[in-house]
Length: 137
Image (cartoon, rainbow, N blue to C red; front, side):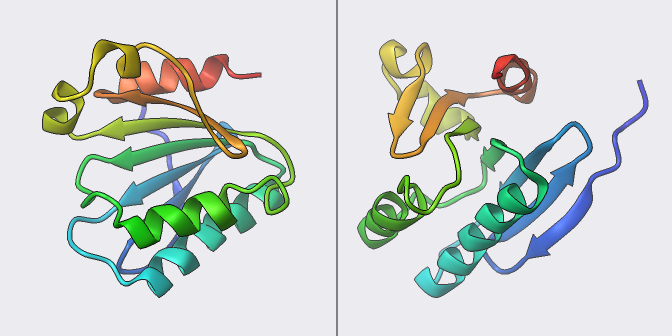
């Protein structure tokens, strides 16, 4: 199968946002620490892309990402994932680093979770993440 051409929508020091022709955003986080203003800009662009295209799915690649700080987590929950900020429910397939994945209890690995307007599931590989994402509505 030929590789799919992804279009870069936005990039900053936090990561890269790509448009997948199958109708979802690919959100790739870079390694290293982040400034919260850059994370906020990054995630606002994710929301803008979803609204612009009428999409509701995200493939999140957090395999290189440094864990969120408490301040980042709070902003994501209070603002970015709020139902008021999102036009509809979002589905996110999130790929984690293998070492972080291995530390999770089975109950976290095998079920959907809810955070504000997002239903998501954690994965350790792209094939499984894409399979779950393609099954969403």
